[in-house]
Structures are given as structure tokens and as C-alpha cells.
Length: 166
Length: 170
Image 1 (tube, each protein chain N blue to C red):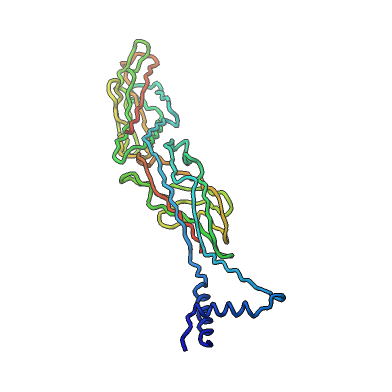
Image 2 (image 1 turned 180 degrees about the horizontal axis):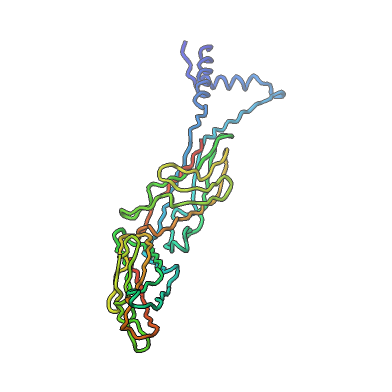
């Protein structure tokens, strides 16, 4: 006896089911299955923040020249899963060998799930968190702590955002 | 034939097993680049303002060889490079003058307190005289107390001059 291949077995099974059911009393159950895996997307209205020079006495907190950044986070997660957006500075603000602590950058958040915070180069700080799937939009308004003690220069740092959808 | 059916069922089970969803944590990343401009600045206040005045009371030269004025509170704020030299100097516009009478400006001396402040100095109308010398950005506060040499030789009058302070932070 020859051994039938799995494909021929499937064809036989489908053919048998089709022949066995009388047309007039036929009921059919169709099970639809869609595999929706987790997915996360993150976008910003701008990928650059610039703080102008200012007198520390009159402007102790400098607002970014471009205003607030609008963040759009798209996440697909399980029903009760917590979706989290964090930010971490790659370094302190740096101008050559001169530095300003990353904590000189603070922000206020607006939009559901968005929080206020202070940038850290050591620990990711929560920008926003939500429960379950969805598209969330909010803003982050950054401010730069001004000081007479800073050395002159053009300081820069990269802020790394991570959206996690478990 | 029976074996073929079982093979089909096993194959179907295999397909179902393979199609079972495996949910892994998903992440998305983004970067925002930050630039902050910090320019050189200098700010000077004397007694909390940009201008102040001092006055010396009349006194008997035998009793008071010098007459002191109330101390001036000097606040310096400077933002500069790491090794930038912050200097505060003072220069008199002219000798102490009352009409046509004068008292030499070097009769006006001072003593100071505060880190980086010159301890003492003598006024000049021809050269800048150092009051403060510091390095780098930051705040500096101190006091400067002027004293006028008293003398029987002075003609009576109300003598005035203007002292101009210059703060430099490169």
C-alpha cells in the first residue's frame, strides 16, 4: 500500500465533506481567523528643538523656538496592556568639552496619557502611557533652564524616544 | 486509506500549531535633536541698580584723616568661555571738582570685600583701575567702600566726579 501525501489527504477530506452534505439542509460554519500581532509606530511633528540665547535674569526658562512637538504614537496591544512612551538623553548637552546637565531640559505634556517631566541621561523618563491599542496624539513643550554659570557655546544632545507595546 | 486520513489530520494539527499567534513586545524608536545657544553676557549692578551715588560728610581733618562713604554692593554676572577673563574696572571722569576748585582724584580710595575683588584701590581719571578679576562664567558679589583723604588744604565746596565701571566678559 502506498502512503498518501498530506496534500492528497486534505483534498480527500474536503471532497468527502462536500459530497456528504445535502444541498437543501446545508449549514456552514466559517471561522475567520486574523492574526493581529503587536505593532508600534512613532512620529513627531519635528525632529529638531532649538533654544535661543536669553538673559538668565529675564528668561530663567527658555522655550523652544519651534514651540511644542506633536507626538503621534500608534500601538496595537492586548486589551489591558500598558503602552509606554519614554525619552532618554543620549548624553548631557555638550559643546566641545563643556557640558550642561540633561536635566536642564524639562517638558510639559498635554494630551491624554501625556505627563510632565525632566530629561535624564541615565534613566528613561515616561512621556506618556496608555492602556490597549489605539492612536494617541499629544504635545511636549520643552524648556531649557537658563543660567549665568553656563559657558558660552552651542550645546546639543539627542533625545531618544522609545514606544513599547507589550 | 485509513493511514492517509490520519496523515491528513496530523498535517492539519501541524498547520494549526504553526498558525498559533506568538505575541512579542513591539517597540518603535524616534530621535529629537536638541540645540541650545548660550552666548556671552555681562551684567553689573551697584546697590541693585545700574547707577548709584556716594557722598562724604564734612569732617575735621585732625579727627578724621579719611572720610568713609557707605559701602557699595556690587553684583557681577558674566557668561563667557571656560577660560574667559571677566574683569571689572573703574575710571573717574575727572578730578573731584567744585567750580574751579579740584581735589586730586587719587584722594579717593577704596577697599573691597568679596572673592576675586581687589582688596584696595586708588581712583584714576587716566587709567582703568581693576575692581574685580575672575575666570569663567558665574556670579560675583562684593562690597566696595570708598574713602576720601581729608585735608586742611582743600578749598570749601561740594566736589563731584563720576566713576564709570566697565564689566568685560569675552
